[in-house]
Length: 249
Image 1 (cartoon, rainbow, N blue to C red):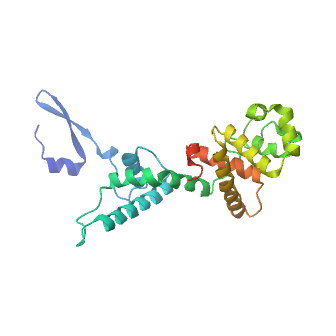
Image 2: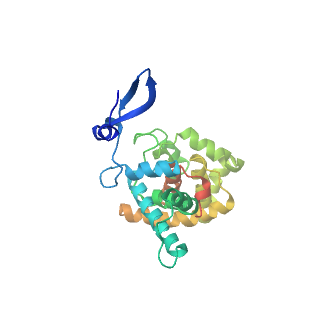
Image 3: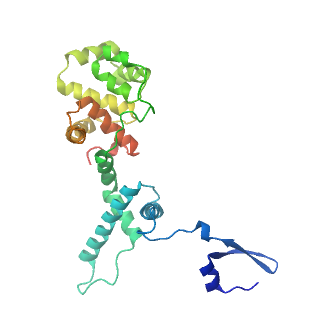
C-alpha cells in the first residue's frame, strides 16, 4: 500500500520500520505526540532538560534553570565568538552539560533552600505522631518528633552519635556552651536525614543555617527556633536529593 509521506504526516500517522509481506504496519502517533514549544507545552522545559541532563526537575525550577543555561550560552558566544558576530550558538545540550557541571549543584541547593516549602510534617504524612515525651529529655527534641521521626530513631542517634550514650548526651545538652550544642544539633539532624558530615562541613553548615534561620523567619513572619531551622535545612537538602557535598557551595 502506497501512501504519500506528506499526507501521512498531516494526518498524524507515522510509519513503523516493520513490513509484513506486501503490507507496511502504521502506527497512530497523533495521540502520543506533543508540541515542542515553550508557550504551548507546559512540560517543555522539564522534558528538554530531562533529555539533555538525564534528570527531572520541577516545572518552575526547570524554567529558571533553562534561563540560566541560555544566559550561559550567550556569555560563551560573546566571549569566544568571532569579532564580526557568531554564526549561531553553542549547542544547547552541550551548554546544559557544561553549565550543570559548574553551577548546577549550587543552583539546586539554592532552589530547595529558598522555595516556600513547609517540610515540617511531610515525612510522616500526618501532623500528630507519638513520641512527644522526648521533650522531657530536652524540649528541642520535639521538633524531630513533629518532623515525623520516631522516638526510637531519635534515641538511637542520641545514643550512638560519637558513642556518647544517653547520659553523656543529656549532660552535654545541660552544660555545654551554645556553640557546642549548635554543632551537636547539626550532627543529629545530618545523621537522621542520612548525611555524613565532617567537622569542616559542620562549620560551613552552621554559617548557612544562620542565613536559613533568618530566611525562614521572614517567610513565616516570626522568629524560628535555630534547632528547627537546622533540621529544616537538612530536610530540604534531603528533599532535593542532594549529598553532603552541597554544603558550603
